[in-house]
Length: 129
Image 1 (tube, rainbow, N blue to C red):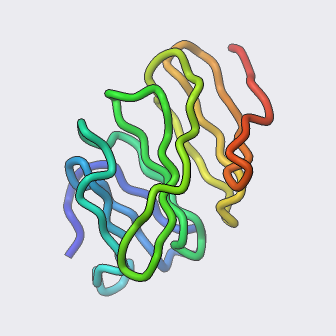
Image 2: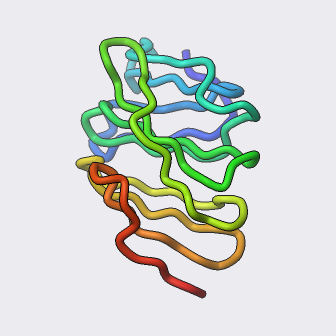
């Protein structure tokens, strides 16, 4: 089954759930809870935010110990680190991923938000609150 607490995200179609487990993340089928892919060492100090693409091939994670978001791509039943979206000056507090996994938006405790092209690993826009 799926853990009862901790950061989690669901794909837009409701088929898949990404759940943070300590320093790692697990992707599972929502109905059965069966694991699709997992990785135990995504971050060095816990995960506080998770986002998942519709097809479950991309998961984004953020940790309070980092001022960045890591982009993970599924290869079979494992995750590989594809990119790190870095540039926030403080802790990332919000995270969303487009359904196709191509774009992300991150929010920071300092009141800024950034829109990213995940495929190109580039910041497209910074909004200052």
